[in-house]
Every structure is written in C-alpha cells, then in structure tokens.
Image (cartoon, rainbow, N blue to C red; front, top):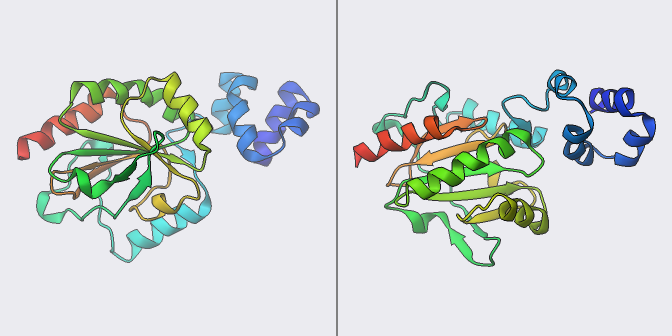
Length: 220
C-alpha cells in the first residue's frame, strides 16, 4: 500500500493520493492514473490481485493440514477422478435477487469464478468467460464477487454483458470455504459429481479454460 501511494504521489502529486485515501480506492484508480510500465512495477497487473491476508492464511492452513488436495491448473492438469475432493457448500443471492445453491447444479460441469471489478486480471478474463459460457451451454458458470456492493458488481456485469449468475461474497466468508483462494481471480472447475477437478489461480483464457472443459466432458 505504501509503495502504491508513493508511486501515485510521484506521478500525479500528493493531492491525488490524499483524495483517494484508502487502499481499495487507490487500487481502483491506480490503473487510470499510473502509466502501465509503472503499474507493472507496483505489481497491480500481475497474475492476480490480493483479497486480504485472512483469506490467504485460511487457504494455506487448509492446504497444510490436508483437508484440501487441489491441483492448480498452471500446467492445465485435471486432478485424477479418484483424488478429487467435494466442493464446499455454497449458497447466495444472485444479482437478480434469486437464491442459488451450488448443489442444485449437480450433474453438470460447473465453473466457479471469484472476481472483483477493480482487479485488472479479472477485467481481462471476463470476455473469455462470457464467450465460453455461450459456447458451452451445458456447463454452468457462476461468478462470485468479492467484497463489493451489489451496485458495483451489477455495473460490471452489465458493462461486460455477463449473462450467467453472480452472487456477492460481501465479507469474504464464501471464498474462505474454498481450498486456496490466494487472490483474484481464482477459478474452480467442478466435475458433474460436484468434485473439484482443477483450480486456476490468475486469469483464464478461452483456450486454457476451454481445453479443460473439453477434457472434463470426455470423462462423463
């Protein structure tokens, strides 16, 4: 946070940093105020955005004690079916006011994407998610907005023409139940039995996620 404030101070002056104030607002505006090369040095545009130390610590504790054995899809691997763990129970109200229970999607492959509107990698991957949701109607896509208001999330969804349901995780409790959400975006792919087949930390692409969905569909 201090490094980010120093960069904004240097590029745009102390008045801007003073007006922006808190970290969340600084992050939301830094990409509009700071030249791209400088922003990369700060690290805002890396593979993911921080969602807070508590969630990261919880995820690390879960992995360390063996409660969750989830393979990251950095190398596009799927966890072997016999090693997959069931997804957590997740229920929430969508942005359209409906209740969504993850268990109701059992029988379908499910993509669960944790995101926030201020996160640049989340912004970058959204068109691919929207395209894939249209290309794979048999796959259920669910977005989980982290720690933002419904108004902010609705604006992002509307601007990006996101048709699949999104729920609000206002205090981060939903993310804390999942195995390893160290930052945003983080995407989980569930098999038709509701088990976690893989996890992608950082932004997805149409090619990478589409390949995973194709391979998972062959299992059924």
